[in-house]
Image (cartoon, rainbow, N blue to C red):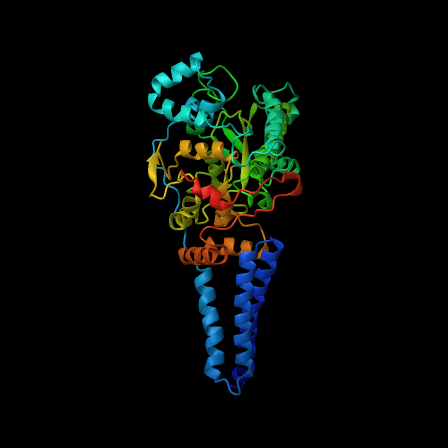
Length: 471
């Protein structure tokens, strides 16, 4: 028992002190992220814990059983945290069917001109959408005066980026390989995969994955993207390379301001640049390849990214990655080059999104579902109302991204948040504890940052204004 009398008090005091140290570390991380509420709350809790710790050390006599209870409790807690229970996965009861790009929301607003032949044909077969769409058309377009976040200078940042991106992506069409020497096609799939992923990261990709191309994720007909309207899409590539680029947290925190649209446009540009170069490289190696980038897609990026192991599909309808949450923009390169495929990842998103609903609670248009999943074209997922979402975009003058900002997976990659990400992937009670902590420290409706960068300054639009106009 002598060893116990000597070691147990030391161990118990180290454990109690480490709790205060972790609290101060969280405070420091929050201050570094310029987030006041979590910093103040964690500082207050740490000071209270430190006071209790000091009183504990000041006690004249602490029974040995108390010193034994503290490491015992810590050991039990550690075991509970580390227990691994396979998380639920997204169900695909099937059969999965292809989507006509002409039905996509952006096609209707960026390709259909009122009075045109295509306009008449589309709304003749979709009469239920014409009234809704025309009501949205009467609102200011993104970047035009009249929206809440419009500014004569700032609102033109993202439009200019998208203009350049549109010029850049005209080279995406055509997948014919270059005539090359036989040696370029003699390497193994492992070597091709290693080189392509390395080059993509060098070009700015934050995550890269490879997957077999599911034909159900290829659009059936051309809509918004370049090419004859309504032409059947034929894409017989066997593999896909998915590129993800992180959107900076310090810009996302301004959502739903137009500053977020600037960030979104920049990351679409970065993803497109990497995808176009990779596609060009594959053609020079003698393979067929096509880049699928903003406004010029032949495939659905999110489900392809899920298959490529970059993340899971969340309640908000976006890809949620393990590193950045939904703060990513995607591009895809399809090809017939042999690749080593990545396995899909499962880190608890389906379970977490089911109980969290923070995106749905904060959605100013009510577009994100609070209900259970439904079967949509052979996949069980949450259904969002795209028209309600886009109507808010037009009124706000930005692509909103409020759901991205408030998502608990969107926190920056600080040491504390990285540990929490790993822990929540292990079991359901960790995910529930993480959600309670997120609500306590950041709030059920996390506050937005109102001080825009100097180069993006304009009159401030408060959250109260946003929710007052909630549709």
